[in-house]
Amino acid sequence: MRFVLRSLTGLALLALAAGLIANGAWRLHLAQREAAEAPAPRGPAAERVFAVEVVVPRPEEIAPTLTAYGEIVSARRLELRPALAGRLVELSPAFVDGGAVRAGELLFRLDPADARSALRRAEIALAEAETDRAAAARTVDLAALDLEASEERVRLQRQALDRQRGLAERLVGSTAAVETAELNLAVARQTRIDAEQALSQARTAVEMNATALSRARLELEDARRALEETEVRAPFDGLLTETAAVLGRQVAANEKLGALIDPSRLEASVRVSNAEYARLLDDAGGLRDLPAQVRLQAGELDASAPARLVRAAAATGEARTGRTLFLALEAAAGDLFREGDFVAAAIREPALEGVA
Image (tube, rainbow, N blue to C red):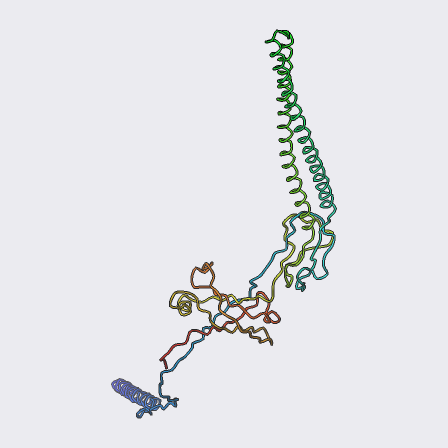
């Protein structure tokens, strides 16, 4: 029994010794692997060397260039609206979007029948007013002659009265004859008053006829203008856009049928910041007249045109900051640029002296 207990104890001690030896060997293996995986110590880092261009700063005069972006607008644009309502009876073949027209060319015509009738009525009314005025003038002349005759009658009746009174004083005439002469003088005076009233009324009629004649002439001018306004012609050479007219259509007065753009007066509308805008002002606070270059890039199209800085917008607009500038392009730029093109503008700022 003792032999078995001692054997078991020896086996337990042997197993414990083997476990300790195995644990030590495993720890030694881990330490060797960590040492192998640890990075090698670095040496001192090498200094990096850069190649640069070295120049000697010399003060000189430099003109900076300000780059801004915007769109092309036309400084001369006219909306085509008929002054009268009517039916379109004639339409120019060039009245299409992009159509080119010349100054004085007929764009469209409204039915002139009503306007011609109104003109004829105005001419008749003017003729009647002229006839009435001539008749009133003749009435004035006749009333003046009647007044002269009345005054002559009064003069004769006064002489007759004086003669009858003289006869009565010499006891040759009768009292009844004097009374009759006085009555005839009173009738003559009343006739003269009536003649004066008739002359005054005739002169008033002349003045009223003159007013009616002026009114008839004004109505005739309005009728002529209305007839002329049935035709709408191009006031300048340009391109049509926003066209909306169909032959035979009934249009209302002041209805927009299109717009006419002058391609020879294109401008680039660009926006700059307040700081950039301040650099473009002179000592008096006014905007300088500076040269610029406007460039258009659209696919394979790469065009540019010279321009001049002409003005700044009166308001800041919806952005509420910065300034909107307008650059006037040369007249020939209308062959390449169109209203609405997105462009880049390079504005040559005032030269700076003594900078490097």
